[in-house]
Image (tube, rainbow, N blue to C red; front, side):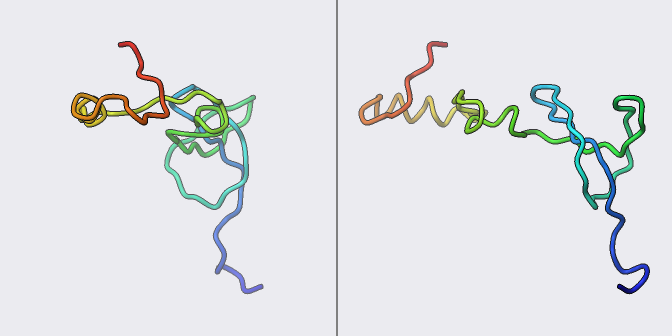
Length: 89
């Protein structure tokens, strides 16, 4: 291989912010932040979703709706044909 053409492949910590889950894996991604994890310093990558928080892997389905579109749709069309239960809220 040619020297200085490939990015550095190293251990990094991915931090799932939604459930405060951290795991170590290898990556070439660049980051400015570092974290001390289990007594060793690693580059830190902050993520929103991982296998610990994704509904497919956890079995917990939740609808994230910041604009109120789901509620507006349900008011207009009701729950006819809906496969998800209406959350009491």
